Length: 344
Image 1 (cartoon, rainbow, N blue to C red):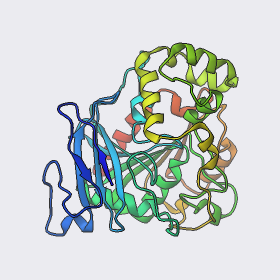
Image 2 (cartoon, rainbow, N blue to C red):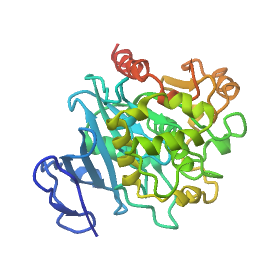
Image 3 (tube, rainbow, N blue to C red):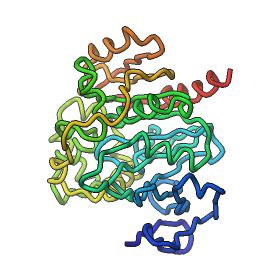
């Protein structure tokens, strides 16, 4: 099987992600054969936002894909998108008032495709999800040192799991609009990673559900019709971003990369509950939680209960119904500060 990694210049070569002759675009190697993984490609994309696509081969043969945004020499920040977004989520989430991408120069964002999404290969049917281990492979293969981890929605669970299992690799965890299953219930439920009792999803899913299978998310007319079907909290959180062509194109590209039909949203794999990592509540690095005052998902009372025994966790409540659609400036400024604090 081969896939094409987009490039801003001439057509990028096709890479066989499972064949013996995979080559890295920058011929990066190590004596340990890249920690038993294989770096596949890193090329600039011609998609809606200026980013570079990369992938590596994991020991089980799967490809793990990511997109790099921002300053390639910046502070390494792993970005775990919400369901059903892909590695392209930063291109429409982190935007300014005009809908243009607004990444701070100080950060290098590595946004990851979860297994079976975008350009990351799916797990085998009998395999147990190991998101923390996949991230460890990526971080060590890229040799970026310690990283900050930003999890959006359900991605917050995997961010906490990574920091709990590999504290030496994590500077901090930032959870935006987090959904932590069983946050006020049993540790076993909170430890459940990758497979959840039922599909839960973020704003992209809400917009998709309000449309039809053939909704053209690049069209302002389509967004006007979609807005009439959204509940008031989602309309308020979206604000006027949809009016900007860049924002509409970036959302459409994210959804197209997922390749998910509207009906498939109700078929997100649930599987049996499986504790596939340490209790995320045992994470000892600084944790910043960002949550909207009127946001659904994890209730504010549940999040506050988590903080009672975790003095290094901090809850930031922002106005509105969706922190992930709010102002990212203070969120990313906090990420940058966590590196300075760790170096002090």
